[in-house]
Length: 415
Image 1 (cartoon, rainbow, N blue to C red):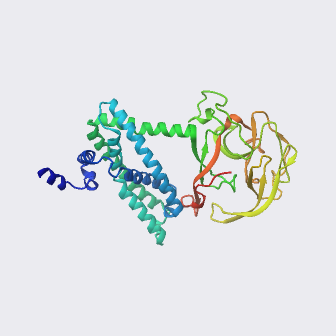
Image 2 (spheres, one colour):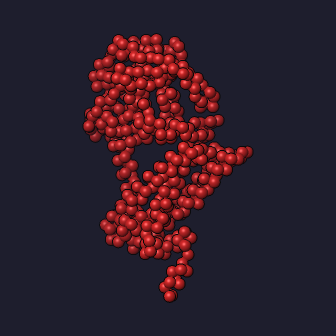
C-alpha cells in the first residue's frame, strides 16, 4: 500500500523534469521509457527549424500553411531519425566508457531533455499568430531586430536548460560522473552529428542559396536549394574545404544539356556559381540576335507570357520571356531584358575537350561562359553537382533585414 501511495504522490514528469531531472528520468526508465519520446523529439526539432526561420526574418510567415506543413514534415523526419541515431550512438559510446544505458533508455533521455523547448516553441508560435492578425507593433514589427533578438534569447535560454537537463539525466542513466558524462555526450552527439552532416553534404546533397538575379526566372534571389553531389561523381571540390587530395573525378557521369549546375569558378575556385549547362565538349556555341545556336543550328525559341516578379526594393518588374528547347528535349524559360543586349550576339565559342559551356537563364544579366574574363569554359572537374529542389525561399521587403517567405516555391523541382 505504501509503495502505491508513494508512486501516486509523485509529480507528473512534465513538471518534475524541470528541477528534478535525475529522479524524473529514473522513474520514466523504470515505468515506460518510450513514453512520449517521439512527440518530444518532433517538438524539439520543430524549435530548431523555427530558429532557422527566425534568423531569416520571416516570423510573420510562420503560419503560412505551406511553410507550416514543410516544417512539420521536416521536424517529424529529422526528429524521429535523429532520436534513433543519437540514442544508439550514446548507448554505444557509453558502453565504451563503462555505462549501462540501453538505446531505448538513451532515447528517453534525449526526448525528455527537450522538454524546455516546448515553452519556447509555444512563445514563437504565439508571436507568429499575433503578428499575423494584429498591426501597429512599431519597433516590434514582424521583421524588427528587437523582436528577433527577444525570440533568440528565449530560444537560447531554452536550449541551455535543455542541455543541462539532458546531461543530468544522462549521468543518472549511465551511472557516470561529470567527466564521463561529458565525454559520452560529446562522442555520442556533436561528433556523430558532425560526421553525419559532413557525409550528407559530401556524398548526397549540399544546400546553397542564390544571391543574384542571373538565373531568373528559374531561380529567384533568396531561393535555398539542394544540389545532388552524386550526379556527376566526385572531385576534390566535393570535399569540405576542397583539399587537393586527388585529381580527376571518381564515379564520373556526364552532365546533360539543360542541367542547372553548381560549379567552382575557374578563375577563383573558392567561389560557387550556378548556371544552366548548354554546351558539351567540342560543341560550337554562338548567340545570334539573342538566340542560342549549337553547332550552327538555332535552338527552338518561342515567345511566352511575360515574367513578372518583385525585386529587392519591393517594386514590380516585368520582362519578356521565351521558352527554349535544347536538342535533347530539355525545355526551360529564359528572360530577355534588352532587345539589343551586349551579349545577344557573340563570336563562335568552340568548347574544349573536358569542358562545358554555361548560360544564365536571365540572358541579359548573367556573367557566364560568354564572359571570358569572369567565367569562360567550365572544366568537368569544377562541377559540384546538379540543382534539384528548392527547400525554402524568401523575398526581401523594405530592407535587408525584412523578408517574407515565398511559400509557393517550397518543394519546386528545378528543371
